[in-house]
Length: 629
Image (tube, rainbow, N blue to C red; front, top):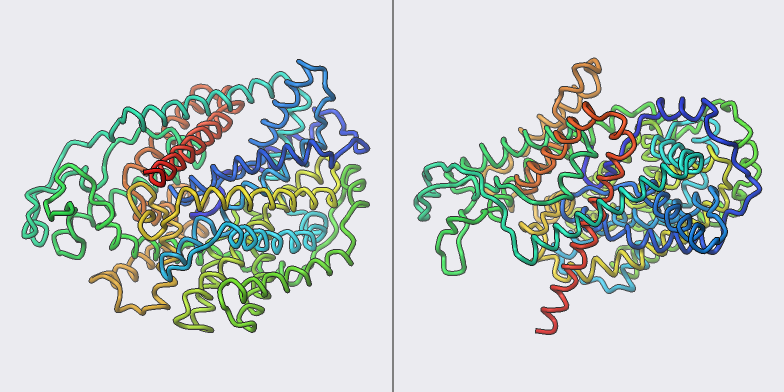
């Protein structure tokens, strides 16, 4: 699982069997769907949840599928009003519109806000205004929405791809309306988790509570000793206990394999390579403004400038290698071949409400012109380069959607890197076209897959795909307006605020590193980084091949190269917290299986939302205080 991609997962076979048992009452497909309250609820929830993904994306490089969270919150709000004020109940098809709009808005972070957009500012100094950024990200998401509309029948009906997140959402929503009291219990758990995480975040910030240093130190040698350091402590190497509920919750969601891989990556990078490169002088020790050694502080910034190169190399090589194993999916996506799957009654009903082909073709032309014009107007990219980038985007969005439909993981990073490498050849030395063309590809691929997962949910409950498409557009608008506002407010100075201890921004580091190579050449890299890139890249390729070729029982013990590479770029305490969360989740699942099935992911989602929203609020307060001061 690579950065920028969804950390949610589901078992499609288990969920399909649950739906097939007939334990849920049939859905009234004539009920209202695209109501004002459904759209407004989805836009508001999506706008709020977009803040969570912007925050977590800049912190750890991961975003989360918010469909189930939005469905639970929408159900809980309107069900409470029904019980208190006897208002009209919030129907299942209305809730589907709500979750569709909300998930579209929440995924706005993958339209570049946590990767190529800040990378462009860091490399070129380009300063986005809110209006430009909102229009730019909205156009990117529209590209993905239009492609998804055109792919719906082929991928959902003809090829009958599972789209696991869509199945999981459909199962949750049906169960929610079959067992309302159980759903309200999950809503309470979600809100309770959010409240706890918010309180902890406030206490840690206001008291403040420092990270607890791990005991232990190494004797400084070589360049580190010559620079005045007597020892290199584990705190200097970022090994500490971080009281972050969000990071532990992320560990619970991503599972033991990914979390253990990150812990292994942290030990190799910060525990072994860190002291070595400090001794060689390839990374500088941490000092204050007067040049005095920071004895009891992390040396994250100086050390990460070297470690990011092998880390990024491992993530990119593993991502592209894993993607290469999907060549059958790639060919199938391009050919668009398949045999019609058998359809149930719900599928036959909503097949009659497809988006007309003429509308799809018109939309395709509109987004081609809009995306081309935006690249030319905002970034000065030549017209032929812009058109080539958009056409490449259409192709790669199709490929990414199929891979996501089969595996549940959208290869946003891989799609972006393919475009970056392509434009590194087509337009060498041009960081702007390298990043922004890849931004269109990665963002459109993410939004395309997101809509198809939502349409899978709609297909299984008898919803209208045409109305879901409208909901997706409304949600994208909400996410662009709110998410871009939040990004600009909390990160007003990416060049000085990102790739720091507070905001590690690993996805930004990856995109920036690739663009930097084509912009400045390999001579600008720190000493020893080139060899590290080749070694780490080879490890990433080997582990990715092992993941795909070993028997399942052995493959599950193979370290995840994407997770390992990510650990090189973020502080070790992040990896430690996620590993702790994964261990707790494993124990809870083992000894309280029934409870964990009902509440574990819901609780983790609440913890993520609570800390994220509080963190955003604190960041905004700091900016306001600095301006006032």
